[in-house]
Image (cartoon, rainbow, N blue to C red; front, top):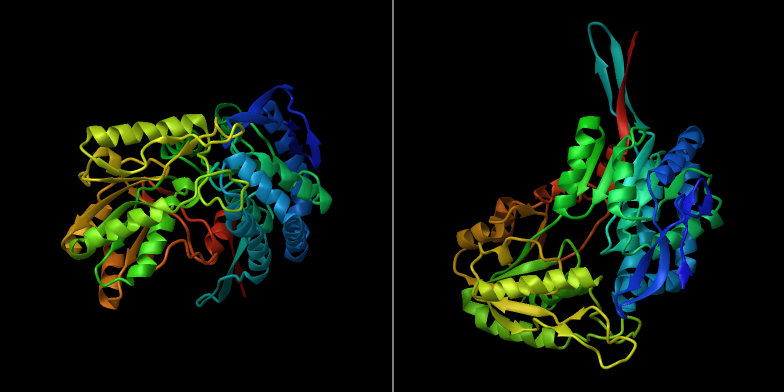
Length: 482
């Protein structure tokens, strides 16, 4: 049994309440760790430490801050297998996926912002009559809050922490209570590299207790949150009247659009990946698949065959490429949507049931067969609400304008992917899709310099690149008359 601790003021400490939450391995359904059940008193102590550290951290210089971020990246790289195993145990994802995506991306996040902060520039404007020079400084905000989700634990945790620290802020960070393990290991990395006390504070616990305390703390000046849309609504109601800066990356109901002139084999393979990577528990997964009618039946047949080849099994087994859902509660939520799809007239083409593995250790795991559903209206609840699991719908379309209407016809607008070799169509359709990200002939191809985020109910603001560094700083204009 593991006993995790908070990381506050440079030390690993127990929560003030001395109470703990169970941390369950999704592959076994059994408790494998205890995590702190933090509350407002833990937040108060962390904020006090962060305020005390802010002057040193904000004035130490970008090169020094970059050295610390790179040192943490070096530590993770040296312990990559430990981090990958922790991510798999915690989240239920295949360790093979954690090795090649989650942990390397966490390393890349730290290295990218360590470099980016050293290549910032300022705007300058010359004013005539009277002569004056205006220039713009960007300064860190102070103490900021970073709250990350359970689906890509280290990946998205570092995605927020790295730019906040690089810009000179001190951070109060909360990982999901469902997947805290790699955040705890990041605490050990911070200690190992000698990160100054109070600069980064990692508090574990549930949303209503520690998350709410972070959002409503008057000395935390900005909140970066990734999670569900309903939680984002609640967070905004709390933070907005306090005039906090707010970045919200919320849900998605993303379309995959396959035109008949696509690179068929590439479109097929990538659509399987975009549907079921991380058991469909990525906000960018394509959960609505639209296929031009002339190739629909062939694509459907080939798609179902490739889905049947996914290996559901022990996430720690290198041969497994489809793991467990993150929790029993989430599994039941996804199953309820499969039941809803049947009520709405959908036909289950494959999957649709919980999987019980023939292994005594794994028989209580939260496994669900990858599920493909046909015959639903684009506007039914199954096609309108975020399921966030290994469930996709597939449907034909006849015309370009028709599929654009279908794709845009949900309250969400995070990401879309489209497959065509017609350049004119690609650019024309991309312009009409109401999404923050449009991938053409690819999926999840990320350049960290580009803005990341959605429109409509998928969020407010952008992360990544200069957008993240701008969010975690305030602009100051300086005017000199001469």
